[in-house]
Image (cartoon, rainbow, N blue to C red; front, side):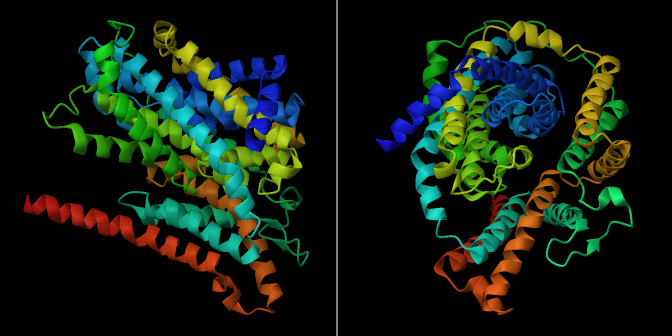
Length: 500
């Protein structure tokens, strides 16, 4: 009952005219950013974050705007996947497998509408999960000390490296680069400058916005300049604009299963929507592909990944809000937004700022409804927006990025650093090194260092404190499982396939 009372107060915040308008704007912008190939939710939130700060929006309003952008990107990513076979973000990759064949067969409208419905259900189920489980987890998290937090952050890195597919070493390298970047600046304990090169602009460390904009937005601009976007694959005939009752019934359990699976994956720190959508598609293919229709335009192959990646996106807010550990690369960026407002996420956030937390959760329900009404009627309009040429898109993104970075400290050094990091990010992308572990390492680096130091100072340097409680032991075992089980499972799959 107490939870429902807090949720009611949250709706009071979310339905305030200003916040409702920001949710609508964020949902629309997020959908557009999500559908543009390559930009994705991290770039969308990173682009809007400095603008929200520069406009001096209140903290809860800024968070509602960024959250709507995040959820909107997850909705919008499916549009270019289905129409162009070009995923708007990594989480929509699996949607293209069956979505684009449906579009080529003249069923683009069905694919777009059923994916919008699946996104809505997945997002709503995950938000309900936040309401049910986040307060419980927040109370449990109060038992965490420095050693438990350090073990938890190691578990987050294990999640993202262990589940990063066939190249976990690249994920480890990216996380190490992020950790290295986080060490630049003044050491708060010893007062020693570290890795600043005697440059006064680096004495406070590298600003979070500069890193995010440089590595994501600028590198994305370079990728766009390298690969001109062609529109020859645009599907101009969308057929029926709504799915029928048969398709609704066919995808019912698929959407429910995928929503629950996506939520569970999203709660794991660092796992992310990409993994959730891949797992959901794999599960549905094993359960339902009796006639070999998956990969050729099966409506369940569209709804499963969309429900899962949206549920995962919402579920990733749980570790961020309750433990102060980002559940995805995008929530890592949002943690940076909280830092701009001097808000520290964690278990105390639910008791110290209930208005902000429950306003944010209620806004997710509101944004979901807004997105459903935006996405289904405007399918034709979104398809035409994909025709925006790069000569118009690239300068716009670059201008927004530069304004956002310059507005923080009003120094050209940050702009130069943004450019350098953009080139570095471009090189890393060419080498196939993922960006999400890097930003996770950068965000968690300082927290890991501080908690490790506090834990060791309690025992005068005795390392046994790091595995001295049931929680730490459980987290270390979970981290080992996340590192070892995925490669063992892939090896078992290869052996099983070879014997088949």
